[in-house]
Image (tube, rainbow over all chains, first blue to last red; front, side):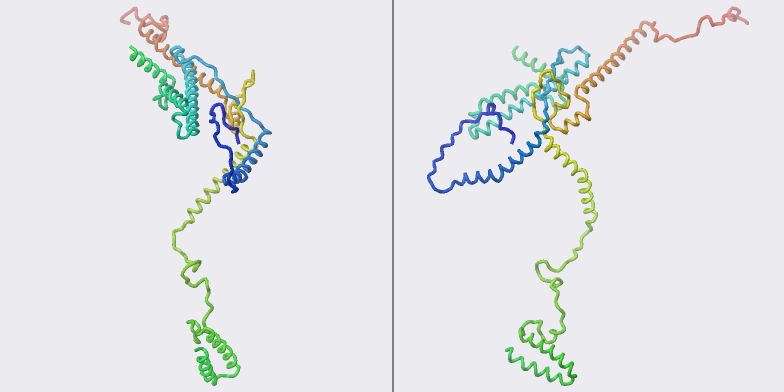
Length: 171
Length: 209
């Protein structure tokens, strides 16, 4: 099986299972069932996976993370410079995708926290909840109602509206 | 009851046999005694009468109309499903004809080659454009069938540049045309005429030629 999740990112609370204090001579059904599961399901699956990994490890392939250079923004382009517009638009689209992935990561964290804590998630995951709320509020204010045909220009116009509204409110 | 009936039966049959020949008598008597024996064994069953004991046919168990179970074969009148079954068979055949090789290929690729692992880009090494993908088949397609994204980007920018130049040229053309029409002199609005020296002025000096 692939390695366990990052313990630093999703820390588990310390285990509070009490030490085994057997007071009967009867066998422990939980132990029996867990051993049964291990030998019938876990062991075959793990050996299969190890065999496949053994075969795969002979032709190891690697892939890299592509980093793009920053280009001038839409606001830094001359009027009528369509090539500059294109590059700014492509950069905006990449940033849009990156922001979507950021929101997904925050959502995953909140879901993991809720799953871990169970019924007391509202008080134990306060930090994750606050982070999630902040991130989604910012995302919506920036990309909120742009729709399927969003592009950099529309986003810029939305930002202009936001700034105008903020100025009207503060004035 | 059975013992009482038996002697009565025998005697009446014997009395009838008087008129026949001896051999026939013997054969008939054997059969009749067998029938009598069977009748004696189970006289109360409906099929064991003296009349039909010898002449009845053996019942076939699969053609008898029994009430439940794998019984009599029926021909149920239904519309033909030949065309439907033929269509489904052909559909299955043609789908699996390429489906199975493709499935086998993909399974072998996943088992023997396996997906790529993420690694840090080494210093001063520019990865090829296909080395940014994970699955080996995607990598193969990106390497052999697609242009690199950098090339696509540059192609798009070149197209945009050409269109921009065309648009600019059209705008300047309109501007120049406007100027020339306004001012009245400009090479575009000059109609070429013949040479002045070619005009024959000789007949124009005398009015009534």
